[in-house]
Length: 193
Length: 193
Image (cartoon, rainbow over the protein chains, first blue to last red):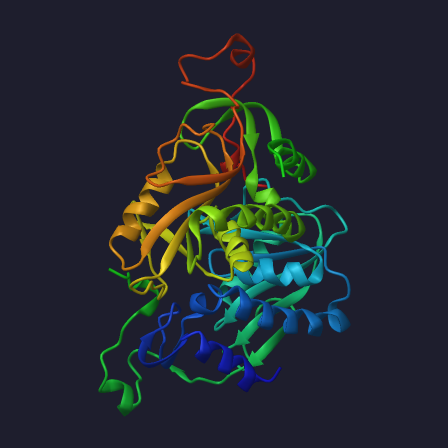
């Protein structure tokens, strides 16, 4: 599966939005990946996660637990675990910090993969590494469907992505002319009604 | 699949806890179903959701969208949608109210099933019905893996469950003697570290 194939799946799900968007990092971009629309489609999620799972064995070997940050990492983590024969757990933000709750546990010696849908700055990935550092088990690496940083993000472990894309993003006070003409919106927070 | 079979799956996942527990409704019980442990296992989730999906066709016909309340309803809703050939969306609490965000949409005429892992009082189910009332589409019914109310909960639509169980729950000031002897804990909030 090529990066173009992955973006074609996002387009099929109506998840490749073009305009002027405020990313969760606060930076701006002309492209927004409304990933939840892809992962609301089990057929498309299977396609992507199966392909990603196939790439991981060579680098990471056996995986016992797939761990990801809620909410975005829940379904990709689950679908990836389904193809790896592993368990899937997720960390939630409690008083600003990612924490594993709900009785989730990792036994000593278990091999843990961190998974996320999209990596942009790698922040929530690094926070998940920190949350896992308090638990038994060994983080063997990380995986994501799309790496928006084109491989530059420091995620705190080796990262394998299904697609690397280079949609430029900008500081709010350093926008290119074409973006300055379009009103910026924060798609993630837009309710339906 | 009988109710005993469903509870056996919960036991296999280590999700059937016995002691003195504070339920999310505030009521108390000697049994706590740590459902997240079941849905961290794709193999067990598939077993339960496939069986539930098979029960729904006769009553609800074709389903286009499975909608559930985050976070607990995300994986069961997704796995159920996978077996129904439907999309899966979830509502999140924003300022105390359940809302569909992340670009989730429902088209006029689409048939919507509400899904949750466990129903106790039916509150989050009714809140999901309210959130859906603002959107196009038709709620054709509801489904859950375990109905802890034994069929008594008012969920705001017809509910089909894979298992009905009758673990008694009590008001905090009206506990049976055996519970009074054991310190009450709130399992959902227990962190790992």
